[in-house]
Image: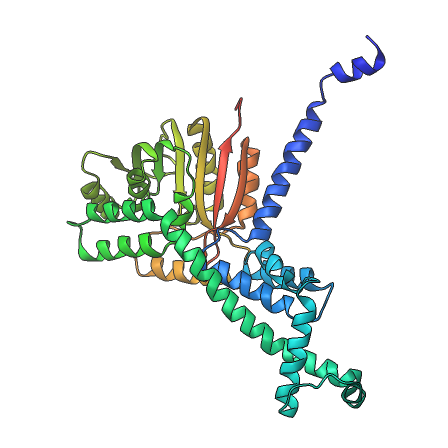
Amino acid sequence: MTPSEELIARPAPAGSETGRKSLRSWLRVLWRRLRGGGLSPARAGASVAVGLFIGSQPLYGLHLPLCLILCLPLRLDSVLAYLAANVSNPLFAPFLLTAEVEIGSLLLTGSFVAFDVERARSTGLAGFAVQVALGSLVLGSALALTGGVLAWFIASRRGSRRLAPARDAIERTLARYSAAPRAARFYVAGKLAKDPIVAGLSELEEPLGRVLDAGCGRGQIGFFLLELGRIESLLGCDWDERKLEVARSAAGDDATFEKADLSSFDWPEVDTVLLIDVLHYFSRSEQDEILARAARALAPNGRILIREADGALGWRSAVTRCFERVAAGTDYNRARVLEFRPAREIIERLRALGLSADSESASEGTPFSNVLIVARKKAGH
């Protein structure tokens, strides 16, 4: 065997494969961050509006950084915004500039610009700059409003067709609670209609198999996934007997619900563990124990789906803490402790347990700091 053949035949170092996986994981996280999460109609419209406004400004070379500066903090779609900002491409830019000068002149002087040599000399470069600056703000605002509304309308139509199965599943889920107390019916209806986690989970098209809904509350999330046809069997557990009574009444023979403390519960083997708005009701050490138990309970190729408040998102985290403390203080949610931690710590803990884990926003259209963490059991673990 020649040296070159030996090099080709030699297996790649294990570290190189790990490095490639790490790079792919990092690129996926970066791409999701640039896209800002799920593209709701409102976010699509806002992203296009931001891009069109920026693209209308005569700040050539700065459009991309401006899109990133505005979109990343607001969790808008930076890619879509930058595509919209390319309205100022070489084909259209001359027409945009001309329109901006004319609009600026009309607002400042009451008349359009007569493009002749004498008028250009009297106006001067500074005069045209002022006209362009004013005109670009007006034209950019008009384009942003028009394009944003159009993008929202198109996304709404597409979303309506795509989410039809989810809407039907929501209706069937609500029907399960027809005999529940009125307060429980209102709560479940509001969560299914407004909670971003419902859309987020419905977009996970893979079958979830045997599901343990840990901290299930009234059970609406598990029932929704069951009605979507994603679940083979459903077991729910919670420490609040009041909520479990509602869940059991809604379940019939389709699911089982047990009273249990997750930090000491004997977890059965399942394909999917749901931890939706659960971890912050436990101390940090208890959270780590729950994550470890969930990881051990996973069958091969299983997953943990976690919706949790990120404790490191500034004012959004503060709003979330406030609402949770009010709910706990009024005994609406029974909590021994409220312990919020950064989502990155939860992800690091999951990875230390041998799982792959990534997160995305789960608070679209709300002031909260919730994220959806998807952790998967790696082959061989």
